[in-house]
Image (cartoon, rainbow, N blue to C red; front, top):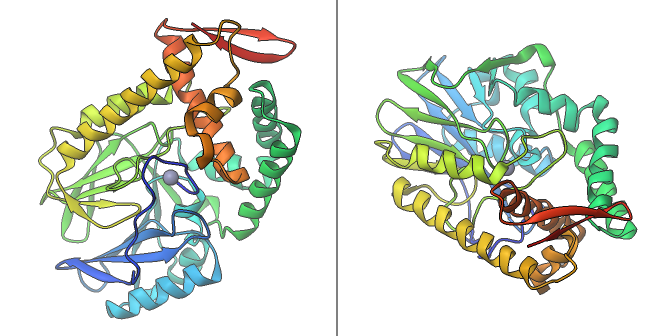
Length: 343
Ligand SMILES: [Zn+2]
């Protein structure tokens, strides 16, 4: 998740450095050049030969530096790592995975389906998807200039990432038990923020949340091409799924670890419900309908300052519009090749 115009500003401690959050578990924040200033990498250190890393930041030299320094603070070298788990295939979570793999020759775990995103969205074969994404933005009313900027931003991101070889990826399936180090982890499919987003519940209650549950900001739930058709409905389902879990400390992909998984899941659900009602109000106030770009402008207003803000805002607005449409509350029609929604 990056550059998302969420309802609350990203709150990251001014002096954000590596910290031990519980015995054997370290949080290593690495920098992001976005409104959201850092992404978390976690080290789970169960001793020699049993050192697991969760996520891998963006791929900037500063990220690699912060990761190496954070590991050093924990007394571990990059070469000592034994497994890497990627919660989802967003750039701020996969960026250093190629460098980590080259140093430690470790298996990289992802949920089945999500691993395909690495090559389809970020790899050499990503051009067809980018063309479709541009077409999606065009059909939803985004002006040429913003679309060109969005394409450029995508290309720039791709150059930053260090992707691992495809044969280093091991896929996991929902409900699977994963034995790693001294612990057993339950693998959970939590779609919404990405189609095959992974959460893990450790046998002692430690909950690895990725970007499914964040402490101070709401995860961006966006609709993209080639993805599941109703990400907001997926997200609501996945929030309900984690709510009753016997979770203790929650390790989010951004921000500091916290307790109270159930409460936060309920808050996030309520927040997105409220936003959906707001989207409905915007659409129903327009007799002739409104495209997603127009709705996004009303929904986010002056918070939209950059190309990144806009592309995330349009994708998030689309997730709400399609959620409302598929529930039968609003309709969609094409006018001159642009999709308009109306109540
Ligand atoms: Zn993300």
